[in-house]
Image (cartoon, rainbow, N blue to C red; front, side):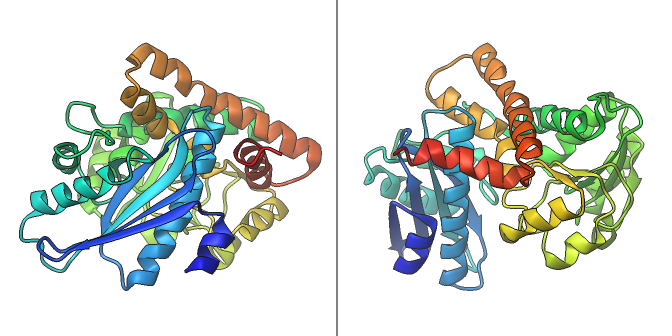
Length: 340
């Protein structure tokens, strides 16, 4: 465990269990150089404790990098709750988690993530103020989608020399809250959509509403398109899948799209421009962080514009240095997180 913490430069790791509710939770605080750690709370089924721990550590590090390059006064953290086989009282479980967060005295602020809802955040908020994404705070998904959309335009400019998306084929993998909202933006801009999701109902809606072309999930990565947009769970870009790609650029909302850092080198070698995931998908974090600080929507919307600006900066550095954009982004974030 300590070797894993050292490898990711994690500041601290916190665990708790509450037999009465079935709560088993991990909070990973990666870096607080720029401010309190902020990151979502996952409520998922994991095969074992090691898998849950790896997920928390990996995601916490990504949140630190995301907050730094988004220009936020926040550190990075992540919470993982191992979903029990049977949940007798979901509200009581999240209330117990809220009490656990409160013991950290503001070092970690939680938010909605995979498997959790604003109603869960409301339960947490009964016992701590260090929570956002509550019912009153609003859903961050539309802001994530807006940021990804602007990032896709920046990616198109860098790859094709034009940010107009009319007629551009975009393959979206995953039509959850963010993926579907992104599809709406892209459709309005005239893009041709190819979509996949394990939920065939969502796929059919996209076909009917946006004129999208449905594609089986296992075939989407190899379908010809200009831009591939992974919007599901992470790790989709690996040694095997990269060889099957038939796109010119990758720009999507999913966290941790690269199975390992070396995949960015493989993409570079194939001439595929990759928009670093934690840069392009920062819209949701920007919203929850600034909303938690009491800022109004116009200020939040203005801050979202920094996503495309940061991506353009990263692409320019990458081209000048002949380095993968993901490597450039990591170096820029680390300068902010670990000042000499």
